[in-house]
Each structure stands twice: as C-alpha cells, then as structure tokens.
Length: 338
Ligand SMILES: [Zn+2]
Ligand SMILES: [Zn+2]
Image 1 (tube, protein in one colour):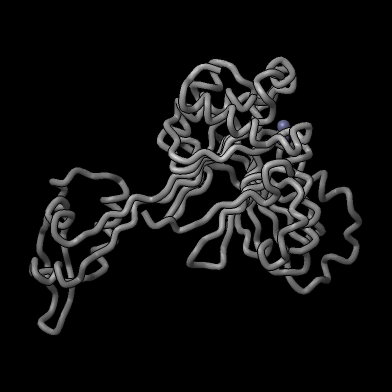
Image 2 (image 1 turned 60 degrees about the vertical axis):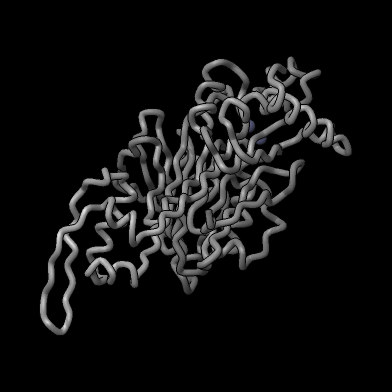
C-alpha cells in the first residue's frame, strides 16, 4: 500500500480535536474537526479544501475564526460539512462580525456549508465575502451510503453516532490504485488509450473478471479495436494497489447501538483514530459526559479489527498519565473485557 495522504493530530492527545490529512502529491489537505488550529501555519490552512466537523461542541469548532481570518481576501472556495443544524451555526459565526468593507477585498472568499441529515439528505448554502456573507441557498443532494465527498482517488464517508446529540464519525477511503504496465499491454497486442479510464472504473466498481472491455486506440495505421476480458488485463498488465482506510471516531457514548455502528464502520481500518477520554475507573463519569473510556475504545477497536489504533481526546485530568490510558486501551483491545 502506498497511501496518497498522511494524517496527523494537530494538537496531540490532550488538545482540541483536529485531524489534518495531507496529500503527498498535491498541495491539498482535508481536516476532520475544527478545534483550535492556532498551531497550523497559514500555508497549511490555505491547503485545506474540505473540512468535516463531527459536531459543533466548542472544542470541535472553535478553530473557525482563525481559519476565516487567514482565508479572508483570497479567491478560494472552502467546503465545510457537519451534522443537522450546521449551516445555521456557520451563518451565526459569520453573523458575529461586521462586514462593511469585505466586499471590496481582492478575492471573493467563498464558504460552501453542507449539513447532512440522518436520512443522508445533504443541504447546502453558500456564503461569499462579496455578498458580505449573506446566506445563499444551494441545491441539496442525497449521499447514499453516507458518502459526503467522492473523488477520483478517494472518498469521505460518514456515519451517525450518538453523543446525546447526533455526531458524525468519518472515514477517509483511498480507492484502489491501478498501475498499467505499458510493455505488458504491448505483449497482449494492445496499446494505451482513453479506454484505460474504463478499465480503472471497472476496477473501482469491482466488476467481475469476465467483464468485456473494448480496447480502442489510434496509431499511424488508423483505428483499432479489440475486446479483452478485465481478468486478462488484471492477470497480465495491471498492478492493483489497495488504498488505505482511515477512520475517525470521537465524542460518543458507549452503548450497544453505537458499538455495533462503530464495529461496522471502522471494520478493517488501516488506521483508527478514536477518543479515549477517561479511565475505566471513571466509567460512570464517562457515561454522564457521553464519552468513551480507554477500555471501551479498546473494545471497539478490537471489534473493528483495526490495524493501527491511535487514541486521543484524553481528559486533561490525566496529564502526565497518558500511558495508563494507552495501556488500558491496548489491554482491552488484546484481551477483551473492560
Ligand atoms: Zn470533544
Ligand atoms: Zn462533544
């Protein structure tokens, strides 16, 4: 596996939640949660294209002002996604300032805010600096399977969890990379051409090996067309590289329904970033606060068979005792039982 992006917690294990997902081959990044982002340099903030907010508790959304300040005056579009009520929350944030001069700024900084409902209907609204950030309703759409963002190389998927309020868990899923061996294609009597886009699509959609592909190309002798089975191409001329799956689960209460949803959502994750706020000795307090203990996070990681688990969102009361939280999670993950 050669991941196309690398994820890192912006504020370590005790600070506000914010996971920065940085693309290796382009100047682009995504952010899961928008807590305090004071430590991120402006150039890193300007790389952001899409920001996903699990819920609007302050520790997950307080970074909005800094982001806005850095982006203001630039002709860029930033997409934000959040749970029910999120568009109004963005609107209220913007409504807290006076914008009498902002329409004269050089760039028309634009925010596209999206909020998703539990039936996966997505509503959207635009806020442009040229329009002094007045709300402009946009056409909504459906997000089957909880897919909020779908691109050629990856998708971002969400699931609703219970934190006393609806809270989104998020997954960054890289699609299978398809490398084509030109010389081996030539050995099969084929040439590269736009038809390979169809091959990539067939692989992405996991079509059966018997699927017939029409290989078409043009050279000095004119047009050529030759049918070929997808399985034959896979066997001889393609290298399929599985993409990474990264899951982010934070601010949830431990109960059966949440546990089942996390196990399904994070199944086989290459990396699971999961909250582990309290020690099991304070499980009652954790339940009241609608958070997980480290042991519960361990059980969920175990049920999901996640390969690498990164706990975070530790309560500041454990400052200097983070090893205990990690050990408790690992114990529950390995041995089972809280
Ligand atoms: Zn939180
Ligand atoms: Zn919260």
